[in-house]
Length: 257
Image 1 (cartoon, rainbow, N blue to C red):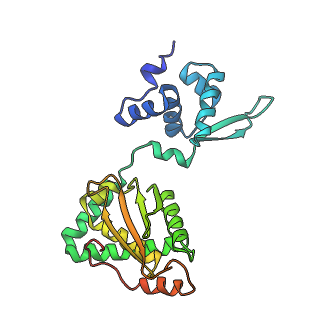
Image 2: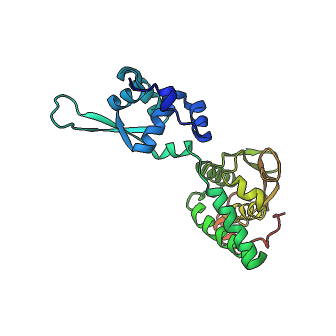
Image 3: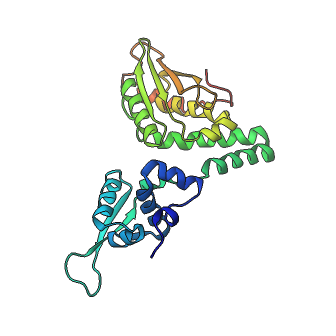
């Protein structure tokens, strides 16, 4: 008799235990199997878990609703009827598994600092600002300041920063409730200053942006206050020129004021 899934199919690593707590034991086993073997049919998964195909299909439906799996039909040689569906993980499922990108990025910044000094580190961050600005400018195109901020928040949220915008009477507040590069920023707070500089350049020279709180610095969120430099500074035909002018200034490494 094959061993039960609880003794053989549920992985025992810390990351797998986390997966079980998130998805439940049987769905976690399905996801882990697809990660290791790329694809499987419902029948194969039923045999793996020692449960019925009906039960497996219920689990697969839940995983599909969460955009964690996808399927395509494939004819099976020598059989009649509908082709068997083969299930695979989606790209979105990658978020379920731990990565060490932050650790690698921190090591790169440490190396730059040690081998090339602070000037080398800041030169890299200025280069990164230019790249980030080029990408965000395709998303932040509105003339109105509030709309520009909402476009920026949408772009940041899509990148994993969970950003939102609110009005505060004198201007706006841009809040990031999650930092996708928290470990890097915690070890290298210069990253936070240059991130704020990126926002400032994208929004344009007709606004003043100030950041006083960051997650990496111990706050509950990263918070930027944004004020128009002139009355009605969020609108007007001269806005694009303001934004182009803003591209000439980047911080020297200190927190933007």
